[in-house]
Length: 145
Image 1: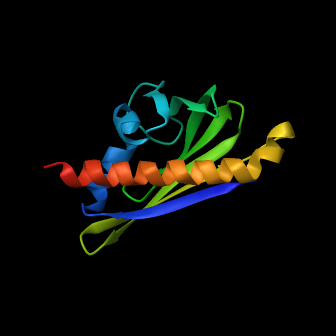
Image 2: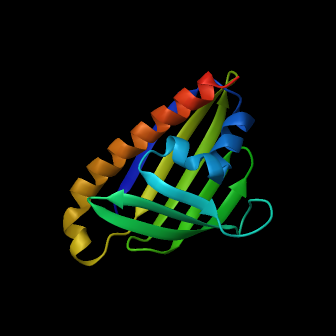
C-alpha cells in the first residue's frame, strides 16, 4: 500500500486551520488537482458524514465517495473512500506550535491489480501533488485577515 505523506507549518491558530481544512466548499481552492469536493450529507460535518471528490489523475477522471471516519476538532480528521478506483484513507493531524499550526497530511492508497505496477509513479506524483496542496493551503491561510 503506497503511503504519501507531507507536512507544513501554517502561521495561524490550529482552530482556524482545522476549520478551513474541513470546509469542503473551500477544498478545491487549495487541493489544486481536485475538480470537485462537496458534502453529500446534511448537517454539520462529523463522523459518518459523506463527501464526493473528483480529480484528474494521469489523464483519467477519477471520482470517490468518502465517509468521515474520525472527527476530533481541532486536531484530526480522517476520510475513508467507500467507492472509487483506488481505495484509500486520507487524514490530517494538526498540532499547535507556538501560535502556529503543524499540519501533517497522509494518504494511504490501496492499489490493486495492474495499478500495483504503477505504485512508485503514483507515490511520486501523489507526494508532489500533496506538497503543492499544502503550500497552497499555507498561502491561502497566511494571506487571509
